[in-house]
Image (cartoon, rainbow, N blue to C red; front, side):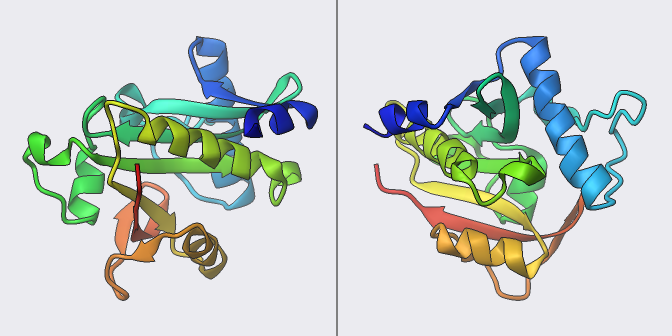
Length: 187
């Protein structure tokens, strides 16, 4: 049913499969993090205006497309499929034992083009990610996110059901200070 509603408004979600789709995702991230927020991820390709880093090699890039243009993206890691990156394990106090993380996932690098923020694009993208995370054999129980340490973003993730791991805990990533958050998921 939701898929049908999304079709009516021109939205489509999926995993970036081609280099062209991946680069469109990296370009959205560059727009949001570098051009709008003034962050300086050290591995960003400033010449081509692409934000990518080593964790993209193991993560799955999802996109939301409005008609023909990719307007938002996020990166997913799942303990069963891709493993959880070291920076997420460290920030969230997760064990190094990979078997213990088979029902754990992490979202990072969520970015929505400015003209689509507050629209159905964010809901469509997160909804598709949640559906994938709950599908067999993953049956995700815990979903982590490192929210940029900005009150509006933290408030948005709280509205989506995420909770602070520890109220005073901050972790520095290549984008700056983040707040580790977690959401219990029900399969």
